Image 1: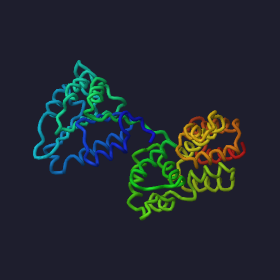
Image 2: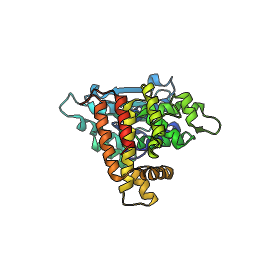
Image 3: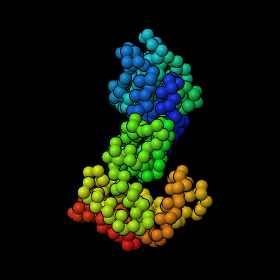
Image 4: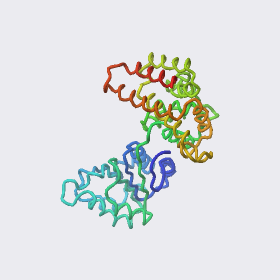
Length: 352
């Protein structure tokens, strides 16, 4: 999964929480809000029953906290008729913004609590505006091993999204083939929330073999198994012009389900990989997988086969055309329809 980690990754931490193996302190920070929201929700749902939340769940917002000692006082209280109380501090980047002490100094006061937290309190500190400012607080949690620090960064489109999807699917006890995996990743772009939501839908409808197939995706998500970015990639990788233009024609008839921006992003990722394959020095299996950012030897083999049809110079030119198409499709320097721009791009690629 292409998420920057400090102590744990998202899936292992989620599994730990759902197993009710809690830590006294959770610091959840970074730019990918979905993981932070999902983990906070999981802590509340698994630590407290709906009835227990009335008296044992406290949610505070950073802008409302001028003195962090109020949070510490709250944490030192005992739960009411429950095993735990949960104290959530959202938008921690705004703590103390209206006093003279400042955000970092206020948050760092928590370092004293972090050395000896209440075992019956679960403190969740959320910061969706990048890295949390309270370094001393973070260091105290790490040093004392009194909690978990999780940093979530944005995922890029393309293969990193596929790796994130694959890890999540495996954690659910399901399997998926390369085509189905590419169909999901290409459809969601870089929207990690949508990615996980679509996978959650599919896990409910899989058969006894627990395999997610292109047919299942077509039926329940609405992505064509024959006309999608995976098939377009395959067609371009073998210079199959007939198939490529059949797919583009389908896209033109179904623009909402096949936005040009997603296809252009896929093409950029794909031909960047072809260029890397042709120029990487370490040609070993492990070296190629590392350079291409994949764990799949099948994926490496497919890219290797496609590289036979495109020279290094051709890859460089194609990437330049893709960038140009991306800019023009967004209305900069051209009034041409985005579908026409994509069709022109595919023609140029096939004749490179």
